[in-house]
Length: 402
Image 1 (cartoon, rainbow, N blue to C red):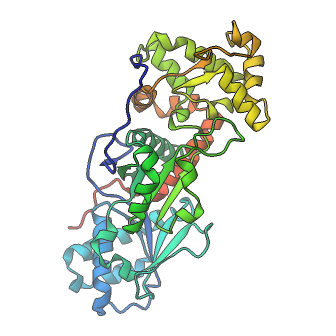
Image 2: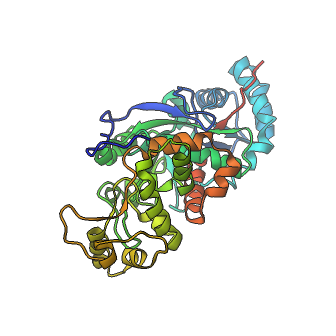
Image 3: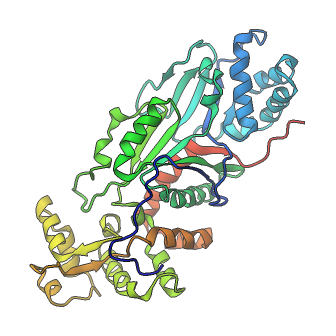
């Protein structure tokens, strides 16, 4: 990572740029994906009822194309497999799915969210009866339109955030033994402050969408930043939801061990050694500091004082005063600064940290990454990983239909 210019790296301006991320690689691809979909109340279905055919064909097509994981009872799938009026490809897809029902049935209890298609409901309605339920229900006609079987959207504040989310989902998959499952999304660029506007646009189009946001919190007691503060529970629908991470920013999710590796391998400029040493000293003393430190801009002495005064808690001053190995001189020794520009206590790593951090993690073994993830970050990686798995799981194997 070369030392960035003072003006920083401008964020991408294009809204809703699209690509697909997969934990098996970061290359741009337009293959599909989606969440687990369970077909329920199928026992008494009359397959001769042509009103059922469009949704059945579309749903099984989406499974065959890797856009969804489907689940249903084996007896029903065997009936579909023998019902030739649906076509050979659909029948063979049902036969393939029947052979994997036991495997997919176990996923229901491991995912935080999935979809149920109720074949007794002859409508397009989407219902989540309680906010804490881990599923939503749709009538079968919801999938009559092929637009509804398309890719789940992952809305990020910046499109480059998706690279780290892809690696987090891959780490979650490997840590939790999800074999034969991939996580893929159509990534949409929120455009920073425009993220809520773009979220509402996706929501109004009735597309499946998961939006992940930085909290922009600089202190455990602080409120949300301007972008995240626009979201609340009433912002969401059953098929379009947001998650605000506890850490200040996505760069906060990069372990210090990754930065250390980058310095050792000369991927990060030596001018950032002091920033690494100061950040390490602070975080070793108070691990929660990792979540609230502005990794790009760093922390000034006057900034630390202002934050602590605002929230009536000496979170940062305690760190600057007592952290062992924190290098102090001048204003930092006095814990007071009126200088202009203000003196820096913990320098930032600049706007290039995310790119270089993700490139290092991409080449790091799962075992090594697990070793360097501290508990505070590991917990957040688990939460984000589960959400990504739940909203974007798909089969990693090609579906045979012949």
